[in-house]
Amino acid sequence: MIIKYVMEVVRPFRYWTIWISKWHTAALHHVITLYNDMFDHMDGVLWTLARNKTQWKEDLYFVTMVACQILSKYYAEGTPATGLLLISAPILYPPQDL
Image (cartoon, rainbow, N blue to C red; front, side):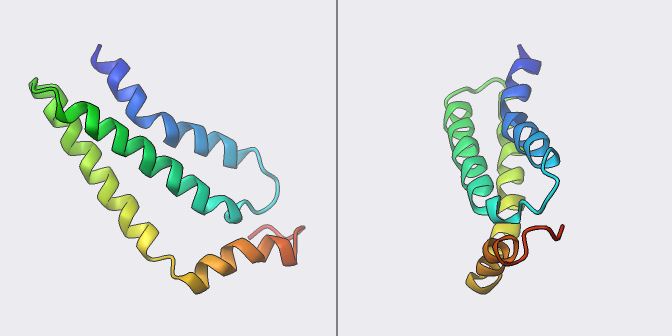
């Protein structure tokens, strides 16, 4: 049961890692979609875990909160200028891997 919950928490990390690794060109323009999907998923996990009070679920809630803080840190480092760069770089020069 615990492993099933943990697998559900890390599901989007696995999905996006596999998805991005299949690209043979830059996939940086997908970063906003990637972060939004991960934040949405983590919000759902936190909401579900907040209602459960067993020790391992409280521990998983804490770890998920830390993961959200780390994601928020990286997301906040993307300014509008760098976000535009991430989106436009593959469009301007598609064959170049960044």
